[in-house]
Every structure is written in C-alpha cells, then in structure tokens.
Amino acid sequence: MSSLKKRIITALCIGSIALLIRIIIIQYYPVEALAGGDGAAFWSFAEGIINGKGFTSTIEPWLADRPPFYPYFLSFIFLVSRKSYADVYYAQSLITAISCASFFLAANKLFGYIRGIFAGIICAVLPFFLIFTKQILTEAIYPALLIFLICILILYEKNTICKFILIGLMLGVITLTRREAVLPAALIISGFMFILGKISFRQKAINFGIAIAIAGITVSPWIIRNWVVFGKPLMSSSAGVNFMVGNNPASDGSYAQPPAEWGRQLIGLGELERDKVAWNLSSSWIKENPARFFSRIPQKLKYLWGPTNSLFLDAFDLLLIPFYFFGFFYLFKKHRSWKELLIIFVPLAVCVTLIGMVYVGWWRYRESAYVGLILLATFGLPDFLVRWVEKLFPFVKNEQLA
Image (cartoon, rainbow, N blue to C red; front, side):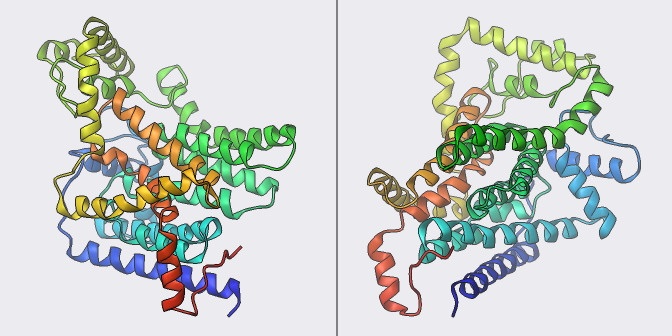
C-alpha cells in the first residue's frame, strides 16, 4: 500500500471513529449547562441575526460582549437546516471529527505514523472535547479551529500566497471566536514562520505581514461595526467585567459576584462605561490590596488546572500524565520535531495560564491547551511502545508519511 493511500485510509478511520463517538454522546450523554446562561445568549444572538435584527439578543442588552463568529455559525445552521439543538450538535460533531483526522495527519508528519495514530485517537476520545460537542458554546469548535490552523502550518509546506491567506483567515476566524486566542495563535504562526522557515528574514517578514493583513481584513467588519455602534473601534466590551469577576473582595479564584456597593456603581451605565468602571474598580482594589491579589493566584491556578470533580474528565487527565513526563524527557533529549512541539505547546499552555492568573480560573478555560498537551503526550509515547507495536503489527511501520 502506498504511503498516500495509507495516510488517507487512516485519517478517514480516525475521523469516522471520532464522529461515531460524538453521535453516541449526542444521543445518550445528558445535557448539562457548563457556563450558566452563555449558551442561551449565543442562541439568542443567532436568532437575532436570522430574524434580520442584526447582532442583537433578547436575553442581554450588550452589543459587543460576545465574540461574533459562533452566533453567525449558529445562524448558518439555522439557514441550511432546522433551528434545533440537535442539528447544531451534529454540525459541531462533524467539524471536530474532521479536526481529529487532520490532527492525525499533522502529528504523523511531525512524529511518525504510530504516534500520529495515537494523537488522532486521543483527540477523538478526549472527554474535554466530547462534552462540549453537546453545548452551545464557543468551546465546541474553538479547539478544532486551532487544529486546522496548526495543520496548515505543518502540512502546507510550499510558501505560496494561498498558504499565507489561509493562515491569516484562520487567525481572524479564531480571534472572532475567542478573543484571547489571538495571542497564542499569533505566537504559533510567528514561531513557524520565523524560527522554522528556511528563507530570508525579509521574506519571512513579508509572509507574516500577509497573514496578519488577511487576519486584520477578516476581523475588520466586526471592528467597523463596533465603531459605528459605539463611536470607537474595539474588539470587546467585556474585558473589564471579566476582570472584575475574578478580582474583587469576594473573589476566591473562580467567578465571584462583586460586593453590592460595586454593583450599584454599574447600574444604569452604558456598555462601554460599565466595562470601564468595572476595570477601574478592580484595578484600584488590586493596588490597595496587592497581597490579597497575589494570594488568590494559587487558587485561580487550582480552578484552572486542578480536578474538575468529574470522574469522566479527571480519570483521562491522570492517564495522560505519564506521557507528559516522557514528552518533557524527549524534549530535553531533543527528539525529532521538538522545535515544532515547543512552538505549539508553549504559547497555548503559557497564555492559558497567564489569562487564568490575571482574570479568573476555571477548568473550562484550559480546553484549548489540550491541543498542545495532546501533542506533548504524543511526543512522549515511549520508544519501547512504538517498537512493540511495530513487532506486534508488522504491517505498521513507524514511517513519516509526508
């Protein structure tokens, strides 16, 4: 069997397995809202779009609090299918199943065939990805978008204009899905272009500039719309409010309602003024109580990276820990493709951690880091296990399939 045929068949198998598992989750896993009223708000914005009222919601009055891509994604599903939760879940399942097959291709290119299969299977069965399949939240598609970006960077080797247009488009879409994603995604792109590229620095800078320009064009309609609505260009109107819920006298590391006197100062304010006052209240509190702010950081990290109190989620995390240790060991020994792994893993893990430390910690927000963690675990698949699989299944050769 040719390498290309072998790669295609394996990717199709992994994608099919991932889709089947997600369909089973949709059919039998009980729905539980993981983010309060966020799902209902996204749904309401999508209804506003489909009903011709623009990016508005009947549930909340804010016009730039939610990132726009996911509500427009929902409204597209409403157009081509029915306005039902099941149709959204199935669409999300298809997208994430394709991302699992793509992840195999990328990991195969980096680490070889056996490790590529390992990455694809982990991506297909990871509980953190599965539970969001049945949620109306950006987390349902955000990791898949990151995976698609990484696959373009790894698999698309020729430095053509189409490649950098695709990279810029994906960066823009990711930013419009999760605003905090712009930093790790941009760092991953710059790492691949500037550290791994074998062309002149001038050409690297041009290519990076093309990608950033396309990303800017992609997000520009949202920024222009907010300029028209608020009189100033902006991406979000909720940075201050999100900062406040994790940094106030009542905060314990996770979400906490601010004191009543803070809440009274926000009553009747416009959207931007509300956000500004919330930011100033928290900033002033931190300046006056720096020790309390820093004492909350360990608790924030506990909420972010600690147990979720779900056996379904936590057991799988424990299973992956030995592979993480092997991954760091192989990084120290600079095994094949260690630079690519660092370029992907470090921005995701560090940015997720820093945002959790500064804003608020919750295990939901570490979901994107699993894209890097799966690659780290894949990289850490022990060599003796790879050799054992080769002996047990002679038809499986741990070759790199370009």
